[in-house]
Amino acid sequence: MKKLVQPNFDIKFSGLPLDLLNELTAIALKIGIKRLALVGGAVRDYLLYQVLNEPWQGLTDLDLVIEGSAISLANEIKTSLGPKRVTKLIRHENYETAELEIDGVLIDLATARHEKYKKPGQNPVIKSSSLEEDLARRDFTVNSMALELPDIKLLDPFKGEKDLREKQLFLLHKKSIQDDPTRLIRGSRYSARLGLELSPEALVQIKTTLKEWPWEWKNGDIYKVAPPALSTRLRMELEILFKKEPWEIAIEKLKSWGGLVLLDQQLQEDNRLNRRLQWARKLKLPLLLALVSGAEEPIYLAQRLNCTKKYQIILEESINLRQSLYSNDNKVKWSTVSWCKYLEENYQQPEAIALCICLGVPMWQKLFNWWARWRWVKSPISAEDLLSQGWREGPELGAELERLRMEHIAKNSSS
Image 1 (spheres, helix red, strand yellow):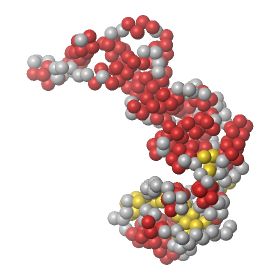
Image 2 (image 1 turned 90 degrees about the vertical axis):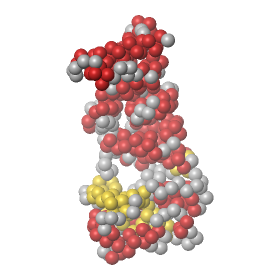
Image 3 (image 1 turned 45 degrees about the vertical axis):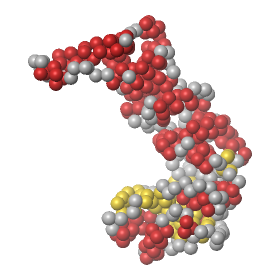
């Protein structure tokens, strides 16, 4: 594939750490690595800034790809620059990649590779390759560009710059979503953050693939055998979406594309999803937890995504609380003290109660009053005061403190 050289780039004002890139290039050349390139989001964002005059997104990390051993280069970088500058080095030898932190800059270093998916949704089989082949394995054309160092030559074999100019997301291959459905999540992130729209061809591929469901595993099957792109990797992409992106727009995009069926059909049809996520943000709950809670079988989905055990316990308690609230109308007449005792004696995870608020269950306002106010109330008399009055440490002391707390809540809730 032919290099497309753009001589007019003024990289001096790009926000990229040029001195560090020059050092890394020199180290690579010293050990016989002749081709080194900056790839990924830094290149895309640099072009948006330099060519399209978009605001500079800021530097988060750098992705570097080489023709050669990434592990050998990482070791040499650590030796050459020393531990004071290289404060982090994690090697992934099975994948020939390494994570470094140099002068506070996060760097992902990888050997150029070719990928082949033997089965849709599974992890690919990889082998070393050229820079051009590495670009050809990527998700979207706007991510299939590289700046080859040290001459800052643009490699753009799939016209990613053109698609950036036209603000469009083109999938790189006809089976992109079939091979790796997590690309759909990444597409929603790019669309939300960069204002890119799916090309008509990409949208057709997404909808056709989701309708055909080419993966051997489907919802209802044993969760433990779900392919990585429908389990752990899918969760990781969603976590990135909620942590780093304008998630409201990204989730709206996913829904409009039909993409939430990757998780659960009920989530795709959920008209209260935005309310739930907005409430989760207000209550400072993990947004992924709030998303999963609206599934037809939340615990099953959490298990499939390999969510933490704590998430699963919270979901289980929230389900029990929901069932209780839907089945017993007498709670409407309960006093504030009755609510406090019921919630605190029966539910060990406060987040489960908050999750029910997000879900808009019956009497959710009662739950909100507890979450926002009553759970923080303490006994007006401290343990130290009681001890000074002759009480001894033990269960009786704790029970007295709780009695005084409830007495205080009763007085203040009725006033």
